[in-house]
Image (cartoon, rainbow, N blue to C red; front, top):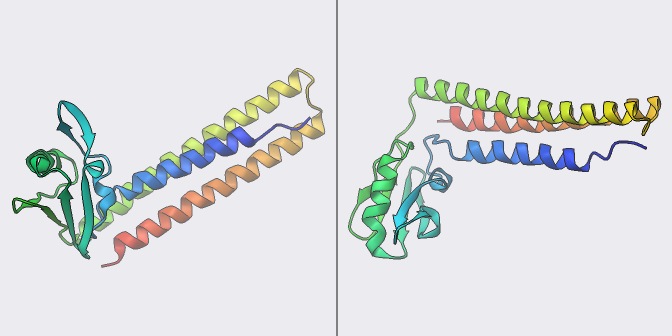
Length: 184
């Protein structure tokens, strides 16, 4: 009986998706609504995601326009953006907020590519940890005589192939983000 790799594939997919989502929130000099995806503000006493309470549109390559559904939340949204880690102060004209993304300096671009590389390494470590978990399951099954030596070797090869496939995905996501960052 070979190891059922379905749950490990699912975990690896989640790791790759989490990495891609994490990179989407990085500010790279272009207007990207995803940078607001984690920003919350107080709305009637409970934390509420900004994106659920406003229409966010891209006005041009460097400007986001945030139109709240409820105009009374404008000040709270403004404050939440200012205290967030995106590093851009919104312009409040009384009905909408405008976020203007400054162009990145060469030094900042290089810093960001290092940051992306570090996040990529962390994602690869997560994939390798899942591989180790799967390999441990194979060893346990072999020890308990639930699997033969040949089945164990086949399972190990399948696990390694999956690991290689997901690490390639992470590398291609990293490469694409680096290219996006370094494009002026």
